[in-house]
Image 1 (tube, rainbow, N blue to C red):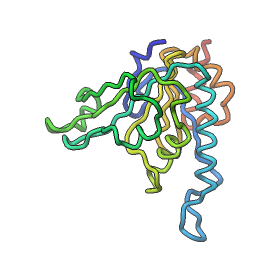
Image 2 (image 1 turned 30 degrees about the horizontal axis):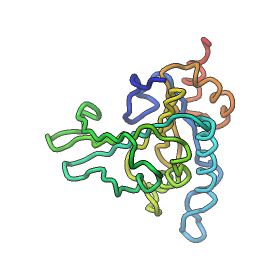
Image 3 (image 1 turned 45 degrees about the vertical axis):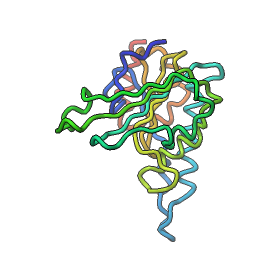
Image 4 (image 1 turned 60 degrees about the vertical axis):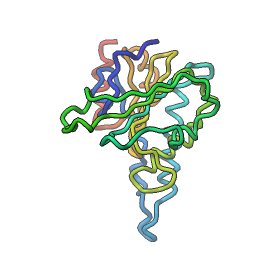
Length: 209
C-alpha cells in the first residue's frame, strides 16, 4: 500500500490527519533513580516493552518494510553507511537505498543555503533483517546520553498495510496511515496506551466509522 501522502516530519502525529499517539513511558516510574542519580533501568525496560508491543502489532511476518531516516544538517553532517542505524540492519547490501536532501520541510528553521534535512530511504526489507529491539533502545536512550543513541528521525513503513511507525523518544510513539480504517484495530487493542492529551482528538477521528 502507498504512503505517498504521509508527511515525514515532526510533529508526526499533528502533521498527518490519520494518526495514533501512544504513551510508552511509565507514569509511576522516574527515569532517574533518586537514590543514586543514575538512570532507572525499570523505566527504560518498560518503555522498550511497550514500544515493542506496538511494533509487533503493526508489523507481521511477511510484511514488506521500508525505513526512512533523516536528520538536520548544517552542510557537514551526512548519513553514512557506518551510521548506527545501518549496524542494526542485516543483509542490506543489495537493497534499494536512496539518499536525498530536503528544504521543503521545517522551512522556518532552515535559514541558510547550507541547512537542509538529510534523508536516506531503505526499501525492500523484511522484519528478519531489522534488529528492532536495538533500534528502539537507541531512540529511547537519546535524551539521556545512554549508549547506544540514535540521533535523528526514524520512520518504519509497513509497505504491505501502509502503516508508518515512529518512536520519537522515550515518552511516546506515533502510528500514521493514509486512512483511519487501517488504524482502528490498533486503536482498539492498545487503547490503554493512547496518550491522554490526544485521546479526544483520536476518539473523534473514529466516531464516524
